[in-house]
Figure 1 (spheres, helix red, strand yellow):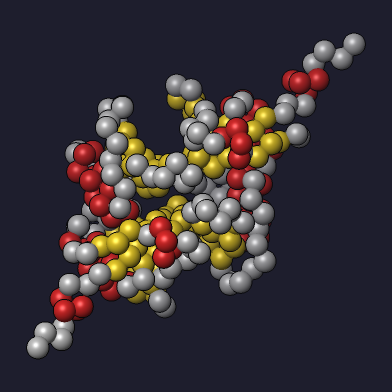
Figure 2 (cartoon, rainbow over the protein chains, first blue to last red; figure 1 turned 30 degrees about the vertical axis):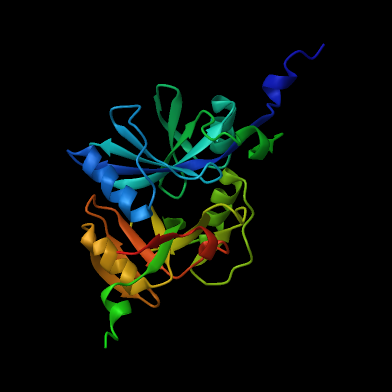
Length: 134
Length: 134
Protein backbone atom coordinates (compact mmCIF):
# COMPACT_ATOMS: atom_id res chain seq x y z
CA UNK A 1 0.00 0.00 0.00
CA UNK A 2 1.45 3.28 -1.12
CA UNK A 3 0.39 5.79 1.49
CA UNK A 4 3.05 8.42 0.93
CA UNK A 5 2.29 9.32 -2.67
CA UNK A 6 1.49 12.92 -1.84
CA UNK A 7 4.71 13.39 0.11
CA UNK A 8 6.78 11.77 -2.62
CA UNK A 9 5.08 13.67 -5.43
CA UNK A 10 3.65 16.85 -4.02
CA UNK A 11 1.22 18.73 -6.21
CA UNK A 12 1.18 22.40 -5.34
CA UNK A 13 0.81 25.82 -6.88
CA UNK A 14 2.98 28.91 -6.92
CA UNK A 15 3.34 32.21 -8.71
CA UNK A 16 5.20 35.49 -8.74
CA UNK A 17 3.40 37.42 -6.01
CA UNK A 18 5.12 40.76 -6.25
CA UNK A 19 8.08 42.91 -5.36
CA UNK A 20 9.31 44.37 -2.12
CA UNK A 21 11.20 47.66 -2.27
CA UNK A 22 13.60 47.30 0.67
CA UNK A 23 14.64 50.68 2.02
CA UNK A 24 17.46 51.26 4.48
CA UNK A 25 15.86 54.29 6.06
CA UNK A 26 14.73 55.86 9.30
CA UNK A 27 11.41 57.19 7.98
CA UNK A 28 9.40 54.40 6.33
CA UNK A 29 6.46 56.68 5.61
CA UNK A 30 8.66 59.10 3.68
CA UNK A 31 10.14 56.17 1.73
CA UNK A 32 6.67 54.82 0.95
CA UNK A 33 5.53 58.30 -0.06
CA UNK A 34 8.31 58.58 -2.62
CA UNK A 35 7.45 55.23 -4.21
CA UNK A 36 3.73 55.97 -4.03
CA UNK A 37 4.16 59.19 -5.97
CA UNK A 38 6.78 57.75 -8.32
CA UNK A 39 4.59 54.78 -9.29
CA UNK A 40 1.21 56.50 -8.97
CA UNK A 41 -0.30 54.10 -6.43
CA UNK A 42 -1.67 55.24 -3.07
CA UNK A 43 -0.25 53.87 0.18
CA UNK A 44 -2.70 51.58 1.94
CA UNK A 45 -3.39 52.00 5.64
CA UNK A 46 -0.45 50.43 7.49
CA UNK A 47 -1.06 46.86 8.65
CA UNK A 48 2.46 46.16 9.90
CA UNK A 49 5.12 48.35 11.42
CA UNK A 50 7.88 47.71 8.90
CA UNK A 51 5.78 47.42 5.70
CA UNK A 52 3.72 49.81 3.58
CA UNK A 53 1.67 48.30 0.74
CA UNK A 54 1.02 50.28 -2.44
CA UNK A 55 -2.51 50.08 -3.80
CA UNK A 56 -1.80 48.32 -7.10
CA UNK A 57 -4.72 46.99 -9.18
CA UNK A 58 -6.09 43.60 -8.06
CA UNK A 59 -4.88 41.93 -11.26
CA UNK A 60 -1.30 43.22 -10.90
CA UNK A 61 1.62 42.08 -8.79
CA UNK A 62 1.69 43.54 -5.30
CA UNK A 63 4.32 46.12 -4.41
CA UNK A 64 5.37 46.80 -0.84
CA UNK A 65 7.90 49.16 0.70
CA UNK A 66 9.82 47.66 3.61
CA UNK A 67 12.09 49.27 6.18
CA UNK A 68 15.30 47.24 6.42
CA UNK A 69 18.66 47.53 8.14
CA UNK A 70 20.71 46.24 5.19
CA UNK A 71 21.53 48.27 2.08
CA UNK A 72 18.48 49.21 -0.02
CA UNK A 73 17.44 46.84 -2.78
CA UNK A 74 14.41 45.29 -4.48
CA UNK A 75 13.47 41.64 -3.99
CA UNK A 76 10.71 39.45 -5.34
CA UNK A 77 8.25 37.19 -3.55
CA UNK A 78 6.94 33.87 -4.84
CA UNK A 79 3.56 32.89 -3.36
CA UNK A 80 2.83 29.19 -2.78
CA UNK A 81 0.07 27.10 -1.26
CA UNK A 82 2.68 24.67 0.07
CA UNK A 83 5.78 26.57 1.11
CA UNK A 84 7.90 23.51 1.92
CA UNK A 85 7.10 21.86 -1.44
CA UNK A 86 7.88 25.11 -3.25
CA UNK A 87 11.17 25.57 -1.40
CA UNK A 88 12.16 22.00 -2.31
CA UNK A 89 11.20 22.63 -5.96
CA UNK A 90 13.35 25.77 -6.01
CA UNK A 91 16.23 23.92 -4.35
CA UNK A 92 16.13 21.41 -7.19
CA UNK A 93 16.51 24.35 -9.61
CA UNK A 94 19.62 25.53 -7.74
CA UNK A 95 18.32 27.99 -5.13
CA UNK A 96 19.26 27.59 -1.47
CA UNK A 97 17.57 28.27 1.83
CA UNK A 98 18.89 31.23 3.79
CA UNK A 99 16.53 31.77 6.69
CA UNK A 100 12.99 31.01 7.80
CA UNK A 101 11.11 34.10 9.00
CA UNK A 102 7.67 33.67 10.57
CA UNK A 103 5.63 31.95 7.82
CA UNK A 104 8.06 32.41 4.91
CA UNK A 105 11.47 31.33 3.68
CA UNK A 106 14.23 33.66 2.48
CA UNK A 107 16.11 31.96 -0.36
CA UNK A 108 19.04 32.83 -2.61
CA UNK A 109 18.91 32.26 -6.35
CA UNK A 110 21.87 30.67 -8.14
CA UNK A 111 22.17 34.05 -9.86
CA UNK A 112 22.74 35.72 -6.47
CA UNK A 113 19.51 37.56 -5.64
CA UNK A 114 17.67 36.98 -2.39
CA UNK A 115 13.93 36.31 -2.69
CA UNK A 116 11.14 34.99 -0.47
CA UNK A 117 8.65 32.15 -0.67
CA UNK A 118 5.45 33.33 1.01
CA UNK A 119 1.86 32.21 1.52
CA UNK A 120 -0.66 33.15 -1.21
CA UNK A 121 -1.03 36.93 -1.36
CA UNK A 122 -3.08 37.71 -4.43
CA UNK A 123 -6.83 37.11 -4.61
CA UNK A 124 -6.62 35.32 -7.97
CA UNK A 125 -3.96 32.88 -6.76
CA UNK A 126 -6.11 29.74 -7.04
CA UNK A 127 -7.24 30.62 -10.57
CA UNK A 128 -3.94 31.78 -12.02
CA UNK A 129 -1.03 30.23 -10.14
CA UNK A 130 1.14 27.59 -11.84
CA UNK A 131 0.52 23.98 -10.86
CA UNK A 132 3.61 21.85 -10.25
CA UNK A 133 3.15 18.12 -10.53
CA UNK A 134 6.81 17.28 -10.11
CA UNK B 1 0.65 84.44 -27.77
CA UNK B 2 1.50 81.58 -25.44
CA UNK B 3 3.30 79.01 -27.57
CA UNK B 4 5.19 77.15 -24.86
CA UNK B 5 2.29 75.92 -22.78
CA UNK B 6 3.15 72.28 -23.33
CA UNK B 7 6.76 72.79 -22.31
CA UNK B 8 5.78 74.76 -19.24
CA UNK B 9 3.07 72.36 -18.16
CA UNK B 10 3.80 68.96 -19.62
CA UNK B 11 0.98 66.47 -19.57
CA UNK B 12 2.34 62.98 -19.85
CA UNK B 13 1.69 59.42 -18.72
CA UNK B 14 3.77 56.87 -16.89
CA UNK B 15 3.43 53.57 -15.09
CA UNK B 16 5.34 50.74 -13.47
CA UNK B 17 6.43 48.72 -16.50
CA UNK B 18 8.12 45.80 -14.83
CA UNK B 19 11.19 44.39 -13.20
CA UNK B 20 14.59 43.48 -14.49
CA UNK B 21 16.46 40.65 -12.78
CA UNK B 22 20.07 41.75 -13.19
CA UNK B 23 22.44 38.78 -13.12
CA UNK B 24 26.20 39.01 -12.82
CA UNK B 25 26.84 35.86 -14.82
CA UNK B 26 28.67 34.37 -17.77
CA UNK B 27 25.75 32.29 -19.07
CA UNK B 28 22.66 34.45 -19.54
CA UNK B 29 20.60 31.56 -20.92
CA UNK B 30 21.24 29.49 -17.79
CA UNK B 31 20.28 32.47 -15.62
CA UNK B 32 17.09 33.02 -17.63
CA UNK B 33 16.32 29.30 -17.44
CA UNK B 34 16.46 29.38 -13.64
CA UNK B 35 14.08 32.33 -13.40
CA UNK B 36 11.82 30.87 -16.08
CA UNK B 37 11.40 27.64 -14.14
CA UNK B 38 11.24 29.39 -10.76
CA UNK B 39 8.47 31.75 -11.87
CA UNK B 40 6.73 29.42 -14.34
CA UNK B 41 7.00 31.66 -17.39
CA UNK B 42 8.67 30.57 -20.63
CA UNK B 43 11.64 32.48 -22.03
CA UNK B 44 10.75 34.36 -25.19
CA UNK B 45 12.96 34.13 -28.26
CA UNK B 46 15.95 36.42 -27.63
CA UNK B 47 15.61 39.87 -29.17
CA UNK B 48 18.73 41.38 -27.64
CA UNK B 49 22.06 39.92 -26.67
CA UNK B 50 22.04 40.89 -23.02
CA UNK B 51 18.31 40.47 -22.23
CA UNK B 52 15.91 37.54 -21.99
CA UNK B 53 12.21 38.34 -21.56
CA UNK B 54 9.93 36.01 -19.60
CA UNK B 55 6.54 35.38 -21.16
CA UNK B 56 4.35 36.96 -18.47
CA UNK B 57 0.63 37.47 -19.18
CA UNK B 58 -0.22 40.59 -21.21
CA UNK B 59 -1.99 42.21 -18.25
CA UNK B 60 0.96 41.71 -15.88
CA UNK B 61 4.21 43.61 -15.41
CA UNK B 62 7.01 42.48 -17.68
CA UNK B 63 9.94 40.57 -16.25
CA UNK B 64 13.31 40.43 -17.96
CA UNK B 65 16.59 38.78 -17.07
CA UNK B 66 19.64 40.89 -17.90
CA UNK B 67 23.32 40.00 -17.97
CA UNK B 68 25.25 42.65 -16.06
CA UNK B 69 28.82 43.20 -14.88
CA UNK B 70 27.88 44.63 -11.46
CA UNK B 71 26.64 42.55 -8.51
CA UNK B 72 23.30 40.84 -9.11
CA UNK B 73 20.17 42.69 -8.09
CA UNK B 74 16.60 43.44 -9.15
CA UNK B 75 15.55 46.85 -10.47
CA UNK B 76 12.28 48.30 -11.66
CA UNK B 77 11.41 50.16 -14.84
CA UNK B 78 8.94 53.02 -15.14
CA UNK B 79 7.49 53.40 -18.64
CA UNK B 80 6.63 56.90 -19.88
CA UNK B 81 5.42 58.50 -23.10
CA UNK B 82 7.61 61.54 -22.40
CA UNK B 83 10.84 60.41 -20.77
CA UNK B 84 12.23 63.88 -20.12
CA UNK B 85 8.99 65.03 -18.46
CA UNK B 86 8.90 61.88 -16.35
CA UNK B 87 12.54 62.26 -15.29
CA UNK B 88 11.83 65.87 -14.26
CA UNK B 89 8.75 64.76 -12.32
CA UNK B 90 10.81 62.13 -10.50
CA UNK B 91 13.57 64.66 -9.79
CA UNK B 92 10.99 66.85 -8.09
CA UNK B 93 10.15 63.85 -5.87
CA UNK B 94 13.81 63.51 -4.88
CA UNK B 95 15.28 61.07 -7.42
CA UNK B 96 18.40 61.96 -9.37
CA UNK B 97 19.73 61.23 -12.84
CA UNK B 98 22.61 58.78 -13.03
CA UNK B 99 23.14 58.02 -16.71
CA UNK B 100 21.37 58.14 -20.05
CA UNK B 101 21.57 54.84 -21.96
CA UNK B 102 20.25 54.72 -25.51
CA UNK B 103 16.57 55.73 -25.16
CA UNK B 104 16.27 55.51 -21.37
CA UNK B 105 17.50 57.14 -18.18
CA UNK B 106 19.01 55.35 -15.19
CA UNK B 107 17.94 57.15 -12.00
CA UNK B 108 18.53 56.70 -8.29
CA UNK B 109 15.69 56.90 -5.78
CA UNK B 110 16.12 58.91 -2.57
CA UNK B 111 15.81 55.51 -0.86
CA UNK B 112 18.92 54.30 -2.69
CA UNK B 113 17.68 51.93 -5.41
CA UNK B 114 18.60 52.39 -9.05
CA UNK B 115 15.71 52.26 -11.52
CA UNK B 116 15.10 53.15 -15.17
CA UNK B 117 12.69 55.40 -17.03
CA UNK B 118 11.94 53.74 -20.35
CA UNK B 119 9.62 54.15 -23.34
CA UNK B 120 6.18 52.48 -23.13
CA UNK B 121 6.61 48.70 -22.96
CA UNK B 122 3.20 47.26 -22.18
CA UNK B 123 0.40 47.07 -24.74
CA UNK B 124 -2.19 48.58 -22.37
CA UNK B 125 -0.02 51.60 -21.56
CA UNK B 126 -2.33 54.20 -23.14
CA UNK B 127 -5.40 52.82 -21.38
CA UNK B 128 -3.95 52.23 -17.93
CA UNK B 129 -0.96 54.50 -17.34
CA UNK B 130 -1.22 57.36 -14.84
CA UNK B 131 -1.70 60.83 -16.29
CA UNK B 132 0.40 63.58 -14.74
CA UNK B 133 -0.88 67.11 -15.19
CA UNK B 134 1.71 68.74 -12.97
